[in-house]
Length: 261
Ligand code: IPE
Ligand code: IPE
Ligand code: MG
Image (cartoon, rainbow, N blue to C red; front, side, top):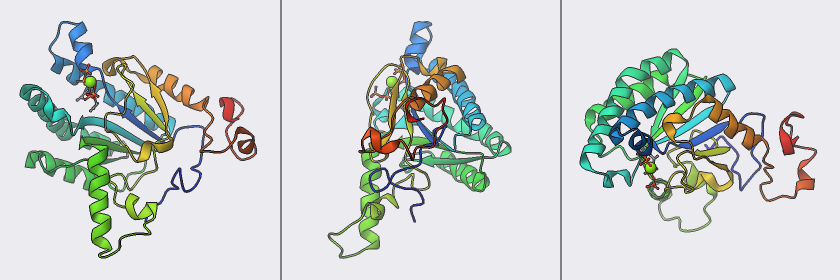
């Protein structure tokens, strides 16, 4: 069922554009604080960045964009901030999904939806159904998502479909049930806002992703900043365990694409 090669069981294709970019959109609160504004003003402004980055990814031929919007640990924030984020999510779902559809974008949400307001869940389901056949870009929003939650829920499903089986599992037995089972592993992981950590994002899938950290705060992360991240990615040599010498004949990047050329 898994359609894409695993970075540990096979060698994923390496092209001129990262096929899947996953982003931890961090720094909204600090952006607002710097301007003597409430933290939530930073979240509002962050939505504008989301629009710009989606558009830039479509233009650049990125096939999958995955954005971390709310982690399973973000419930620990002050209640007013959590409710504001929920309202913002609801409003974005209501106003933006039709526009995504007009632009040929497939919309998906990953995460544990059980604590969300039924109105939010209904809008997610409607948006996913409406955009299911679109091919310009697959946009995934990670909401109440945690990498550990994902691995555990996948393990439970894996065991449920094979009652009695205790050993001899293959990677795909598990990965078929990960929330992001419809996409390849991220080629490029970006975290804005200066922190250099994964914060329980896609723990399984980041095994061989190229990691890019920038001090730019999410509301200030624009197309030019995205291009810098992609340029950095293109200079990396993705060896997947092999030696540099082994790569030369097979990596098909253009002469301008840095070390992998
Ligand atoms: C990221 O920005 C958005 C969410 C986690 C929802 P933050 O709100 O974490 O901003 P900082 O890190 O406090 O600046
Ligand atoms: C990670 O950002 C989650 C999202 C961007 C949604 P946080 O700001 O919550 O991460 P930590 O707590 O600094 O690691
Ligand atoms: Mg933060």
